[in-house]
Image 1: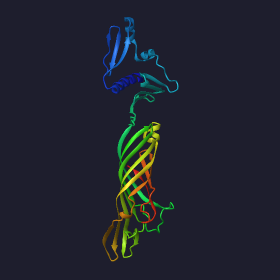
Image 2: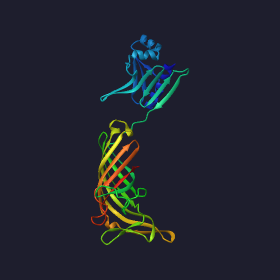
Image 3: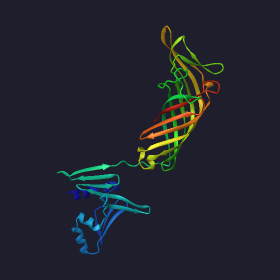
Image 4: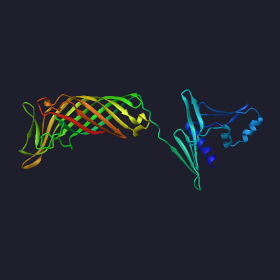
Length: 341
């Protein structure tokens, strides 16, 4: 029963794989030709009437035996159909018999016949199609991270510093239009431009960043109840990265680890401070905004690193130059950690 069931399954799969129907065999002089697809043919040569009569009496098992197909003793796999080309051979149909279970594979489609129980069970599976890695592509991504900075000694500011940042609210948002050029299998060169928005929310919300005569000042407001205080800046940024994709190197797709690193440079588009407060005697919230961009560096440059695991991608950036101009504010180097969407 299993042999015939496999035969019908095999015929159906081959018909589906080649996208056309099998034509009925017909005799032409001394041969039988089975045509399929656009140019596929199976030719059975019959030299005399006795051979033709013998062919009619043969069943499928005997035909396979007469073909003298070789069985892989280690895996139990039997190659039934094979395409030969200049680049080598490509298996189209494979049969793997393991006890009461027999598996027939045609490309990405598998038919599994299980006769281990009282009833014969048939299961059809389709494996995921491998995605091709194009030599060049463009894409868009979104950065969402948290900002802070390091001082001249490489330390994070302490809570006693008026410019110490609060993680929740110190957002970094980036919109990037990128292009990727494949250099080799698993190696890519990515480059592009984008817009970055920096927000540094102060942990000490009673301090307001104001524009002084000689630089930026952090003024402690005792006349009001501070609710929120921050500095924000926006940049037009260009970046380039060298990427290594271990998953593509080993043909594992997104199941591998991805690493990338490269420099970036940005030009400042704007910058200001924002202070939200309430009056001491109550009342609603009020806002004060000042243009503090005059003391921010117009250029920012640094290095970016990326780490990909599965479908998740993380990034980190570090500005090699300071946020403020020399002598116009504290020596602070912005650093960001976040996720790429």
